[in-house]
Image 1: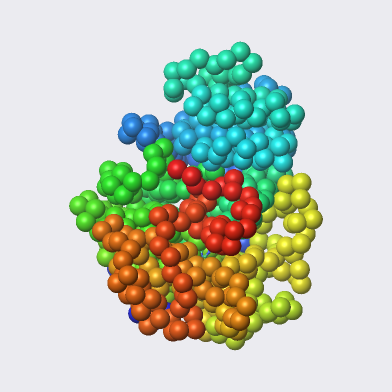
Image 2: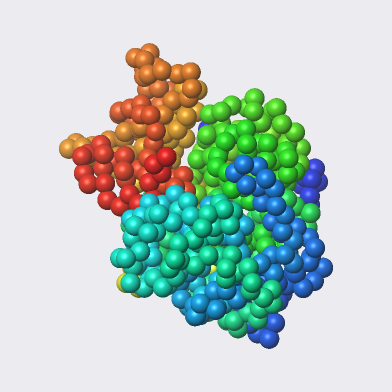
Length: 582
Ligand code: ATP
Ligand code: MG
């Protein structure tokens, strides 16, 4: 437990919905993947994510149930039932097949969060091709880099984003088609490009899904690039059972939920949990094309009566910065459950939810490579703020020492590893099998993260392998130092690095951004130092604290400590394709 953050107890009987996972320890003992597979139909032995997410609901009792509530950036609403979703994705599938796109080929999509993005993803899955969504804010270079590494055959985009594709298309020999979704913007489509409405509009609403199996490719996602060059992690249809099961037990889906995942599909959370988990469970999802805004977000919850909300620490810290008056000015009584993923959630963020709208944030951990949630806080389980919870019942996530031996002693740091073979395991880094193989050693998959486990099996994130700081023989977790820094009323966010030092090996340096209304004065700097030393002790407290305007972050909102470090030391910045620049 982190001092000052007592365990948050749960009164299961008082929760608005009876959790699907009633008791973690029992579920851990009795969980069986065979049982979970019973929630997936496999007609004729076929397994296809699009069938499991869309068609089976459209063919059954959920046909007229809303699958997608879409809100445009300007606030217009469109609703699509599961039957509409089936027809639209069938039309997309027919159109893509008519272009000669084959099973296993890579179809990129570069679009804002518009309904056609979702139809294109599921249409691509229906023809057995590999869908690869990209952040729409990527510049030409990151687009080129990814499409060329994956030898993509098609890019589906919009007139607004097309100029970025045009800049690099001559350098992409694998690219055969550029499809432009122009009707929403009312723009013409240039000769040589294909208008989405020309090929999808007249296409049939009937489609026979390519008979894919569990080991056929389905989606490719590039990692966030937090630690270096983004890697193209490729997944297969088999992963759907993990999305379904974690949707049920971690996201705690119930039939009447209105679920909102704020992640963009350019990041794995936006597909695994913005699409596959909610749709395989047949729930209704809110998709907001608009970007972050504290007022907009709380208004969304009120307006659409969101019940389950999945977001990220970066957004939570921005909401905290905007203050509790905003959430308190909306009726958020529909909300029953809130979660976070992407980087460690500071304990301050966990408890802020209680202050702002009466519910804590539930942190969970996973990676692009794991495809699905591996470690989580669950609605029925007490929260230890700062811990990412306990392993998902059907997977093994443990801490090992340098020899790959499991560490059973509590709170001893080691490498966080997973037992290979979980259903949503990635199957390669595209065109980089060597790197893929290097992640598997001693019978484990090495996640690249460091963590420790307490006596009750809660896992505590320490840092990325490369980020953990060694100062005078102490191993310091940047996350712990950052969490303490943001407890201070003046600090909005913090990024902590180790700076090489002749005597101490490394010294701790904290970069902080300030909340509105605070200024960098000598008195404030003295107070920050005092606070850090009082909470962390002199050995761990930063030796240097620097106030900066913004922290470098990935487009998925993760603090890029490697960039802070490179800038501090005057070293090359390395790959910055995912750097948020807006
Ligand atoms: P790259 O692999 O390109 O450096 P990345 O690791 O940030 O980028 P993702 O797959 O998006 O790419 O992120 C997974 C990583 O994010 C995890 O390995 C972990 O370091 C961090 N992470 C995700 N969720 C949590 C969490 N709840 N607590 C702590 N860290 C988290
Ligand atoms: Mg990673």
